[in-house]
Length: 261
Ligand code: HXC
Image 1 (tube, rainbow, N blue to C red):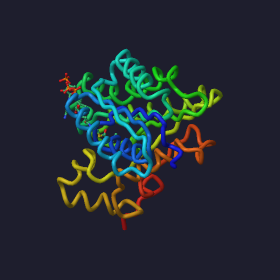
Image 2: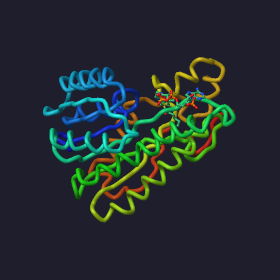
Image 3: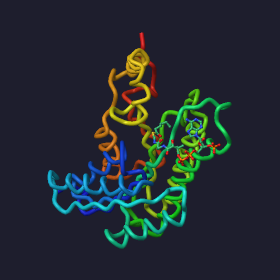
């Protein structure tokens, strides 16, 4: 039986993309997974999809709950955490994955546009982590923030996401430092380009730009959603019990260097 069987996993932005993949990864191991997102219809569909995944699971006991909640609203996030803890038990794994993005130059970005992404990415992570504390399994809970290479490397057209993700990394490290003594670990996954996600769809529109981007990745391919889910499972496993406050790059080596010739 998987060590994740019976665990309660709460995932913000878990109704689509990488975060939905993480939800499926945990439920296949028998975890009880709650996903929240802004759109109620998408949340209901995600719940159904994750429940369907339980049928192919290695371990029985998996369950899913999906409902709408905007991570920008602290009280709503707190209520969502309370609802999940009531339904499934104290939270063992919290993945803060909700993110928003669009490409715009600084001069094409209003203050409200900048604030919108910072609100979703950075305040959304703060709200989830801060509100979760009373509901966490202590000791033993694992917090995971989904960040991006933009936290470290400035990218044109991404002022909002660069600023927000840099904040997400530091915020998560502070959680590691302040809550480590209570047996709560907090780490950051920094994914590279992941196939079939919104981020990569922008690139796929221009084949030349797409090929050039793949050429820069040392592993010479995009990552998969399952590869991010595997890292989330590792970080919340006993094997990672001494891993705390770390940024883990799951990017085929791109952060280490550029493999274009
Ligand atoms: C300039 C833009 C814009 C654009 C929106 N705005 N799109 N400005 N160029 N392309 C401006 C609006 O004009 C407005 O400012 C402000 O941003 C808020 O826009 P709203 O549409 O009112 O906000 P909202 O409905 O909350 O939508 C949030 C969103 C949207 C982020 C703007 O794109 C969204 O919901 N996207 C879906 C989620 C998403 O993007 N997922 C991708 C995650 S992938 P004004 O001044 O007019 O009021 C990801 C990986 C990235 O994050 C990895 C790198 C970090």
